[in-house]
Image (cartoon, rainbow over all chains, first blue to last red; front, side, top):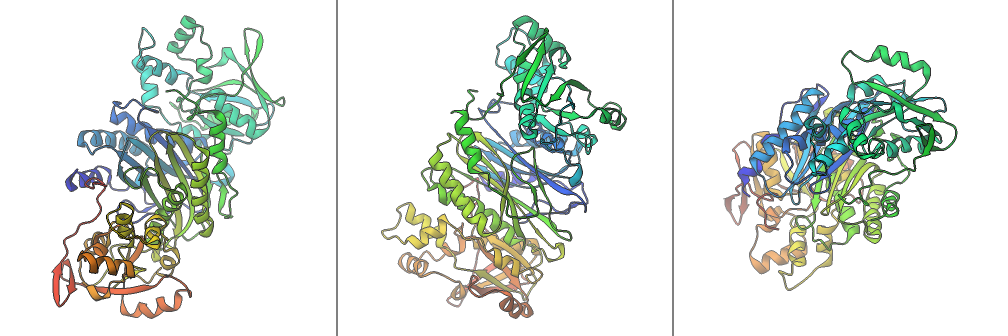
Length: 320
Length: 320
């Protein structure tokens, strides 16, 4: 590799800041950032590894999008407004086409949410993408996992299971394909507007990255409560309905990861407020169950209550 | 890998927060942090890759120390007080001994500087360690690279070239060894107290990670100035003096990376203030040259001014 290529990398990732709160971006020993007074900073980090989280030949523009999206999803699940990202990029080489496409995908989403990329480190090694996102939220309005109360409705945005179904399609496990479903896997949409609208309203919130059962399970254990879900109420796309009807595998929308929808609990009185707050065209959200005093997670399916043991995506016991 | 091992990893990295500004640490979708009012946040990220930045069989405790140290060094170079870290750990497996030692090394340094580890992501893949550090500094006192002025003295802390010499020893390129020198490579000490003492005093500051010529070169180009160094003034350890005498390779302390000392420029009037500010036992610092109007970097050696073209460690044209 040459110095020219090194400078090329830097050029791809250095853009003008869009936020006045960005006092100093890329180019010194650290970025200098000025969150507005009266807010707490929300900070998260997520890593994607070639061969584990994505196919090594994956579209770099989609990777750039997804790396930022999964972190914005974490901020959304806290009710935080996203503001900044730092990128730790480990690359086997500095192929300009790959880098250009990756940066395009990342910045297209960053611009949509007014996120400034303010720092990073590029190193040589096996393809590993790590991004850390920063945002802010008034402390008393932050969405935690621990506040769910018996009687709360359980809600989820969008539809469930599409990303897991898309992965089956990409792996050639099905004899049909649906590009829109695959797109759900490759380019998840972080539910930033919904997260902001839930501030001070939702008793608990999490993003569905490891599957509904696993992630709702985190809310239940952090809150010391249980829950019952209604199978008939789960929001499913036509493709997931078809898959379930074809195969009988009704657990896919419950355990499939990578959807990046928000799962949250609301007291009855908050439902109308949320309806009024959400702008037209925002993502749909549906009630799928109820928080209960009795521990454990159950689902009502065809008149029977089936117990759902906590499980889901675990990075270290996962065969992908 | 089993779920038990996954939980083990989480246990290693979950400790009680020491800072009241840490409102919520590990265990939700994002950490919630409350920097003091009147400060700007300083944010930086650095990655270490097995086989590139360290030997794959390196002592994990030293790796944990160094990963945090190199980031605290970046904060010190901004004059920022370190407060928080987020860790992105990619591991081929979850060996408890390795993880326990890594965590010990990291937390020993974190406790010394009152840094809370507030988030992270552990994934499976080729050994890659990435850490992002956050701290704060009053905006008008932050240390930038761009303020050096002709007539400023150029100063450096500690000694130069030890880490590069330690690497030669570890590689078996020399017929002698000095454990203290190797320790400089493996366990660099971030100059946090010095960085805080330089607030509002230094015209420019950077940490020496890529070698003095490369890093001072960043100050010169950001400030639009040049400099002359004095060979006789360079602070060298006895081991580096011996190496230079033995080999004639006098460029090692100028180009060797990984020292993590601070290089800074001061106007004459600031020297006494810094002497008074620095607590007893703080790292030594020495004047090594002068900022000049004339562009470029030169060194006075044996009565001759030798030009030093900018060069140093570049991740993508580096054979290590």
